Length: 434
Image (cartoon, rainbow, N blue to C red; front, side):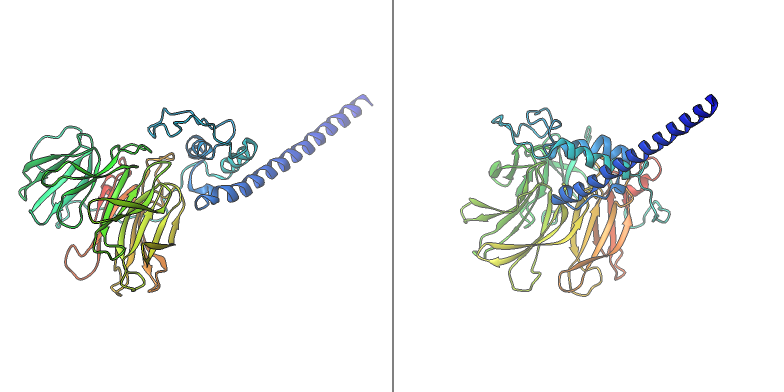
């Protein structure tokens, strides 16, 4: 009887443990389900919902989720007084902001991503053909002169003076060379020159002021022409691009400036009053503005603006010019926040007379540094009504920029690209492809 009793007790214990295990699993499953629901509600309220499979567990746990907790002001995890980061002191008044997100809900979201994410980063399913070196159309040329630890932020070609130039982001200089690639001149500018006046005068230079992620208002648009050194605009938040157009038909050139910023920034147009002063009009009050172009999309003889946004809510937006300085925003493309959108350009891919969009996704300098199979070059076709659909994708790890043109003059469109974050160990050739 004693042996029988022991067996009964053991079996009873196993059954109890099994029941408790099932209950725990069910409870854990409920937590994961709640976490997904919370993520789809709250994460998708700021940007496209980031599917867990886009990153591996380690990237979510150690990189993205802690930063998102800070961005969302999660209780316990958020420190509004931490000004040690490169973004600078954005809480000068030392005001304790309202906690926006309870820790209990955040914990459920974090558990959902950790459980649902893969153990290892995604692998490529599309592969490039073998990359051949030694292209006949392109030949590297070295510019004379010695430059220690170069950090180029701009390269430009002056077709009027037949010169080439580039900016050194560390020294705050514009360097100029002649067609023989001999260094001939330099112009002192604030740090981080990114754009030269695109109207051909090569006088105005847009500078970031600081290269690293920052909300500091150190960016400037400066005049480097005769009597140079004049500041046209200042107090810009890490601006990265400017273009010029008469947006309100008053015969004055207005500015469209992309302030990438960090946690703050935006896309704005600056209305010229004709005597060197500008009034700022915000088009999109979010960080991550990359660049803009002008095109009359609805054929009403008024220039519209198309712009690429990154830094969270990634996508392409058209701002339809409705006259009298008014614009109507329409999103035409959207990407997950880990795609790293960093460049776009309008071009006619299929020669149908309508502008298509070329985009590179490849910024990998954020909180999930890993080789991403969805990084690369994309082409989106215009359906003739300004709706765009992906028609071409070429995977390129860490793609930085791509330029379309008929480089070999054979009558079709070619694409050349560079990558800042390629797989340097196994495929360094992806850093420049044609």
